Length: 263
Image (cartoon, rainbow, N blue to C red):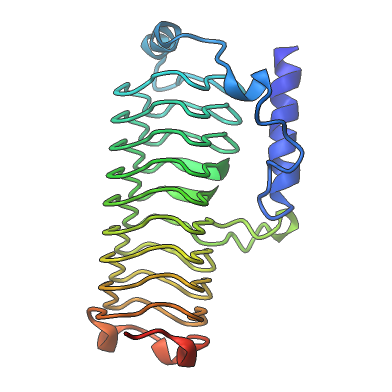
């Protein structure tokens, strides 16, 4: 029965990913399946203690919502299609963890390490990742309204996967996200949705914003040395006191430059 539920959850994640990453359309977010936990922190710790490099802890499809898992070393663990809504993961280590199709609505990942983690079709609306380290991670998640103040996505890949168009445009969605002082050096943000996001003081050195949607975003004080703006939509973008704009790439190829807000 549990295997059937997990398989159904995976199928749901893949099917709804094809419709603009909106997995929440037909899901009852207040159902026990989305707000309860079937394991305790002690049981999670026991599973971690029994894990090996060859057989990492596997929480696929598990209901872990609302648990306090802060500070745990969850590196390499598998959370595919797991439910972690409002789960506390502050200061946890999730390096190389697999969080594909996982639910992390309103989850607290403050100061967590997710270096090299996989977050494909993950639902992370309003998640708190202030000070988190996602360097080198693959992130094609819905982070609408999330907070990544002072976080790092250095060398991370948040761009669209153009090889999987049958599933829809899979990319990171950061609409209305708080990205102040974000370290995005070398990050792939091509085709990423950053509409109305706040990137005040962010470091985008060497990042790619090719065809990114930036409508209404606040880029005040952003560093854009070697940042690639080819095809980026800058309609109503607030670009005040940018650092290194003269060294940005393809800024002349950005869309709606005439509709920038410069003061």
